[in-house]
Image (cartoon, rainbow, N blue to C red; front, side, top):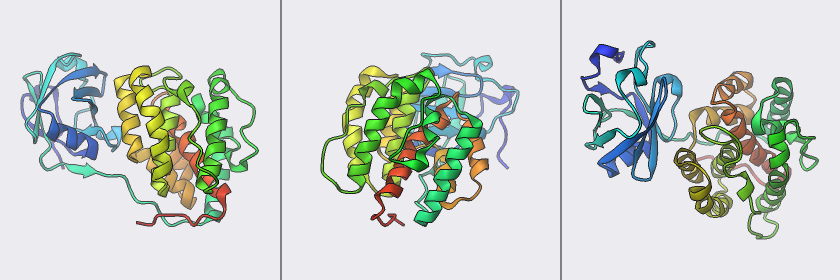
Length: 316
């Protein structure tokens, strides 16, 4: 069992339990950075163009997450961490504020899971269950898009909140483009979705999270070309229109990386196993971030189902 940090032991190096591939690469590539933001149980560090998140195991595995065992009563602000403080990486150890050291030399490096085997019947049933669960749970943000996704192209249902009303038109345009792109019908560029970037409140706005889910699912199913077209249209705008942390998640999603909770929900959707449990985990992510990203990913699932002629792929 790893030793759990207590407030009196922060001058000693402790072992990082796990970190994502993006985090590992950033810590190896950039020797110096700075703290971006500090919260009660987590904090973000800026290394080069990368924004990495330190937190307890409950944060969950993901591309930029660095998981550290810590006692429940420990809160980062009380331990003297604040924005703009310098951070250094030796390639195996992170040094914070001249008093905290985290050793990640033997940490587990998390990678996205592989696409499970599934049938179109399972996918159809999974989308129907997600739609029913979303109707019952009434998630905020763009999670409203999950209701009726099992009925493409007769979607979406009437918007249930002002945010979704704003996003409805670009989301509908993305859905129409996906239906053609995944069925190999034409090579039109993706529609302009600039209005989604930075849309909504929070550290990662709802529109950004929706696009992240979209990109992740396209890569997950093996549609890297479609993901590339969207990311090429989105990333240059995101650097101007959204914050550095959200932009980092968009870059990760462009490469098919996102939180383990999103992949777990996708696996449950495709196999119809443990779905409500996985949706509980989605509900716990941010204010609406989990639902926003799942909505984008589920839209790809619905487009895959509607394409009909496709054989689900790849089973790597």
